[in-house]
Image 1 (cartoon, rainbow, N blue to C red):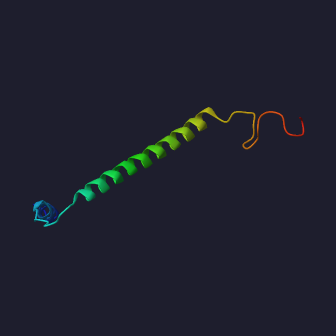
Image 2: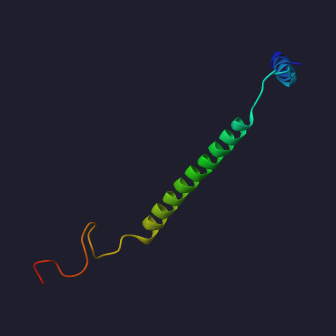
Length: 79
């Protein structure tokens, strides 16, 4: 065996040994973790939605016509 393999096996053995944590997690911690997971899922969903609309906009191209910020219909001076 090479030295690298021996070190890798020793590291794996150290990581597999579990020691007691002596920790307490109250029910509030569970709800906090659940709300964090839901928030991350919502943020990822929004990012994917925005990415998808930008990708579709690039593929379809811009429509000729109104400039951004321009309104349709008669202006106040035309009435």
